[in-house]
Amino acid sequence: MITETEYVKKMLSLGGYSLVLCDGGRVYTSEEDGISPLLETVRSGESWENAYAALKTLGRAEALLLLSLRVKGVYAETACKPALRLLEQSGVETVYKAVVPQFLNEEKTGLSRMEAAVALIDDPADALEAIGNTI
Image 1 (cartoon, helix red, strand yellow):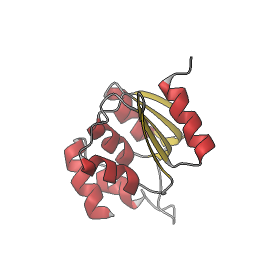
Image 2 (cartoon, rainbow, N blue to C red):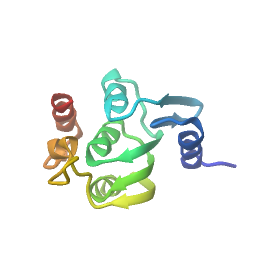
Image 3 (cartoon, rainbow, N blue to C red):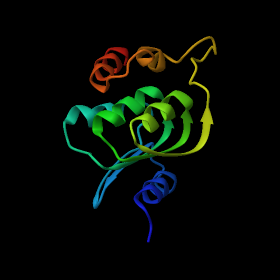
Image 4 (cartoon, rainbow, N blue to C red):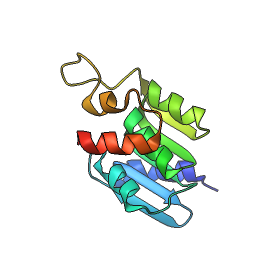
């Protein structure tokens, strides 16, 4: 029997998706890169409580959005330490392939725009506004 974490992980790799959400028989997928598909999912108001998510990259911004969705578990191909810490402190099951200290901007001079926007935010509701203003 395959677990939901294994299922979303397999869907992510085999389907060429950037985001997979699974809640029992209900599945959402996106091939669009970036945080927009996850942000749109949160804004839709659709419940994904206790769902499992798989993402190509998991930054702190994505972690905060996943917390607002109240997911039960997350798999990421590449995750940053602050995102993992945030999810684990919130009791979200986390699995990842690779971990990096932070996601940096293109010049490697500081945090990426999205990570900088949520660096001091711990409340998912506040993160939603900050992320929306940064996109």
